[in-house]
Image (cartoon, rainbow, N blue to C red):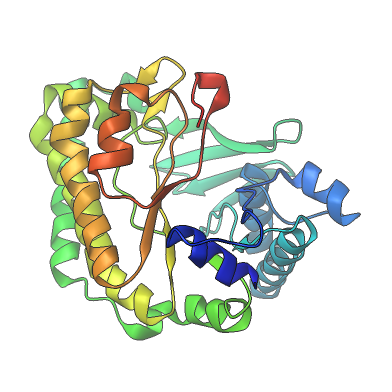
Length: 313
């Protein structure tokens, strides 16, 4: 069986010659040991590399993209993956200022900006400073800003009509690698969790109508894109949001059941309508919502079992 045939058989509950494999991700350090050279894969380190490339100009950015794709492919083959992950973390925004080799400013230096710093030991490229500082902003003003954001996104969504050409890169990857391998494509995510801006978690309790609108935008974008992803040859859609910590979900099970579950289920139904499989992932202890997430949602797979948080098969 080819890797693609093996994965499809597993999702269709048919027998396989071997258990299909997908190591979901690697740090750059680990991947570099495997490939025997510096590997352009990973998390924050890839965002930092992209910031450096964008700062260096169009040719440098093209080389970053070429190298990242090549290394992701060669790494997947080297470890025997049946599902290939060809994209790692991105930050496709040109910095406004280079502060030093590891530190860049994004945004308008005279008004609203964030500063990100790369830490080699952790391979993270996190925000270390923002202006204006949101934590010092009154909560009422933060909710007003959130409402303005939603108004703008909903206006954009009304006009958003995906085009076939928007998915040419994905189509090219499927045509080049998808005959032999199953290809992981990210998309279809509906969620509010730890990586989300704090205001949306607060909105779940204080302004649930804002949280509902936020999730509806996620869902509607996914629903509009799924048909075009299917036409591009996508079979496996990898979605997810870190909706839990080691102590459990970020919100009561009732909130998941009322706000997230029906929207994840709607995305799963649309995927099935187009003969696609939807997968989900989250860090943390998900046992309190396991029946809903793994059963009632209709998702076809899960790809991030957090053993340290008490999750297992």
